[in-house]
Length: 167
Image (cartoon, rainbow, N blue to C red):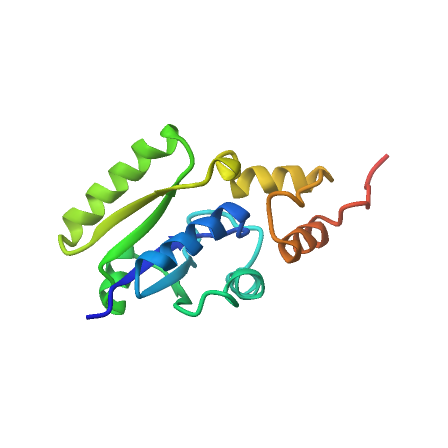
């Protein structure tokens, strides 16, 4: 039986921390689906299509057992449709744990066959979040140490870094 896990998120944008987690999850499961959320509960900078393209370009080439997917609605329903047994969640700090524990409990109540596997990000990525990266990029800061080069270029293009308006 193939052991399939789903690593869900908005990935807006994908960061080096996300890539760290997906590479490690790929070693634990036969197949990992990096599932991009298309729900509009969260305002995103990049469209679903742009996020998928960035992920494909920067992190899937060396991971043959990782595939991309898109989901909306309940995550446990998506897992069931894919035959997945586990949800992968990255934890950066203790502050992430409380929320993630609540979500894991709810998901397990909704489908008792689904387990959540928590992976601690490597220390060098523990402070990285997509929100912080977007804020730094919007203000013209250097984000090259936090995201793949293609993501950095996409962020600079979105924010038109170097162009100052007003005056």
